[in-house]
Structure formats: C-alpha cells, structure tokens
Length: 131
Image (cartoon, rainbow, N blue to C red; front, side):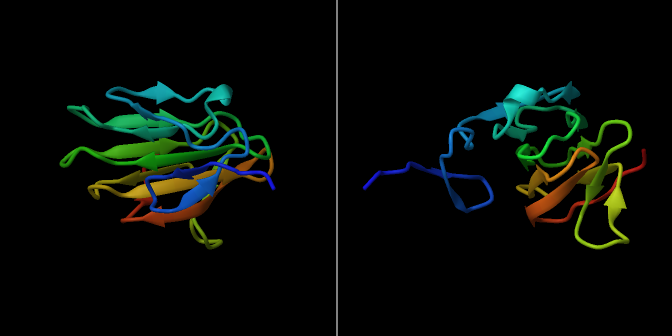
C-alpha cells in the first residue's frame, strides 16, 4: 500500500498531494500576474498596504489556484485574463474579476477548459469587481 501526503489548505480541507498540491503561500503586496508553473500555490495579500489585484494565467485543464485574504481593510481582487471568465456558481454569476473585503475569505478556482475558471470552494463574500 502506498502512502500519499495530505496537505492542509487554507479553505480548511485536506488534499492529497498528486504532484501539484498546495505546498506554499505566496504573499503578494502589489499587483501580480500568476504564472503557469505556480499551479497549486496559495496566494494571499499578507503584508499589503493597499489593494492587490492578481491576474490569473490563461486557463488549461488541471490548473487550480487557492487564494486567502489576510489583511483587513484592504481589497483583494482576482482578475481573469482577456477572453476568460470566472464562474461563481450560476449563469448569472459569470464575471471577469472577483473581489473580497472579507477578512480570511478563501477562494479556490480550477480550470476545466481554456475559457473559464470555476469556483470549487469559497468562504466569505466574493463579488463581481468592475473590469
């Protein structure tokens, strides 16, 4: 029998390490474009003194990214690249950007095709952000 490591993720769920599991937290204090090779890296706004906007890479099936908002009184925004949407759960909740002001809000996005990210889990309030 093979043992598989379990990673504790910021959304409170443990996930099996399949080679690209959550392994580190990247605190971003300024706007940043996420790179393809950062699959599974958790992004936060720890240490930010203002709004932080993170731009997702063009989705490819299997991409996933967790996010957690740490700093109170600062806006944390996740932005889709051109031609891509973020689907928050219903046909009426398809956005270009999502944002939260909720302390410790979490969001996990996954790509199932090359045109959209889908919310796999979330805590706190995430809403449409102006493009």
